[in-house]
Length: 100
Image (tube, rainbow, N blue to C red; front, side, top):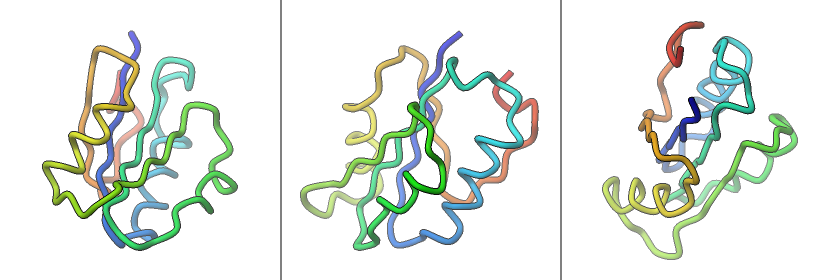
């Protein structure tokens, strides 16, 4: 099973870090079975996340204009490569078996 985890965010870098930490270090699904797409609708520079979470399955995309939540979600969908989509809020803390 391969799944795209889509996370729309706007100016919430500190809490987004916690969410990504849970996805990469608490979640038991092998990294090759999922991708994480963070769609940024805010002003934060999220490129620092590539250094904190140096995984090939992390993509950070920036909206070209303020899109709102639904537009931000749609932007994430455009960059997903898998058929199964799971939307996550940027403040969710998942359990180890959340994706299994």
